[in-house]
Length: 182
Image 1 (cartoon, rainbow, N blue to C red):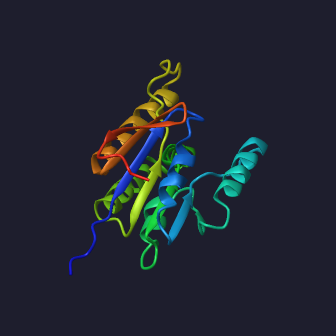
Image 2: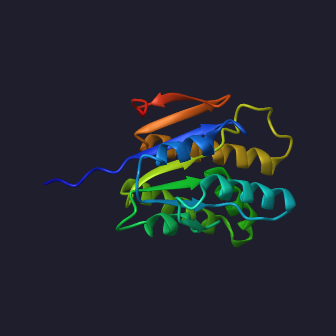
């Protein structure tokens, strides 16, 4: 009897395009699921957004909140977890930028660890990320670097993914792999 191969699904798109809802919908087909949240409530608006996302998920997803150590959080989903939803890679990248005072080596270590875990994930993964490269060119260096790093991160994850979706106006467009069937 051979072991089942794990599947990575990446969902990208613009703000409020339905990425998180679609991720939860895809994860609904699994009985043992987990949710890895990367957001940090730094202000009232983010607190409200986190509250709404928790309400959307309900009790169906045991949630691990991990803003920085994403590789370790994914690795902890061993054993009984069939699928983990990671929401969101772009927020995680922003968290790393916020912690940048620890230097480029710290940033690179987190990124390398994360990509390494994707080479042999412990369970199926459904990852949400933002497409930030279709807008105007940011006026400052830090914002341009963030946009570029987000593009590189999304490309690396997409290469490791069996399925990639672009959400547009709440409609999932399959970019890679056969669309999931209901």
